[in-house]
Image (cartoon, rainbow, N blue to C red; front, side, top):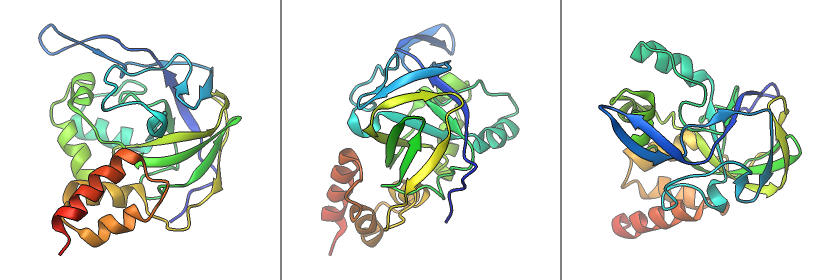
Amino acid sequence: MEVHNIAKIVNFSIGLPKEMRYGKDQVMDTGICKQAIHEAYLTKDGFRGDGVADLKHHGGLDRAVCIYPFEHYAKWEKEFGKPLDAAAFGENLTVTNMLEENVCIGDIFQVGDAIIQITQGRIPCNTISRRVGHPLILKRLVETGFVGYLCRVLKEGTVSSDSKISLVKRHPEEVSVLFCMDTYFHRTNDVEAMKKILNVSELADKWREKLEERVDKYAK
């Protein structure tokens, strides 16, 4: 498992919740439609000028920054036969060389002047399907685990579209985001796998609560 030193930002986007039209003249309020920006200040609550509409399932200190691997764009465009807009999945940072299989819960990265820590894989919702305009993409995100991931902010600071991304510290447990997503979606009664994830103290609180419930349910 390796995170390369050549990881870089391909797209940097933020945006406040606004109306999004989808389907046949349907409308919803969402923060998924973000706009490219050159520079923004990252606080513990997220980027200034960024926001979410659904506070129950999005946002919070453990979910201050959303990252999505750029490499997946080519896969989805080929599979669904249509180009995707930048930040199509509502991520703040679209990055190269930071795939889910190579990034671990608890890993610490420096991005510009800020320092962030991976806390959980992203649980996708049907807002992504509405944004992308293809009903099957949510199913495929779940099947592949190519969902991106979320971060808390350890040090506030300015981030720009040309900021460097560097690994500050690899978490010693090396529990990858992809392992977490496979466990969460496809091995829901695998107690040992869940315990392995729970052993990472830096795991997001919401994930910890969910996995502890499952362990209590399935542990012999």
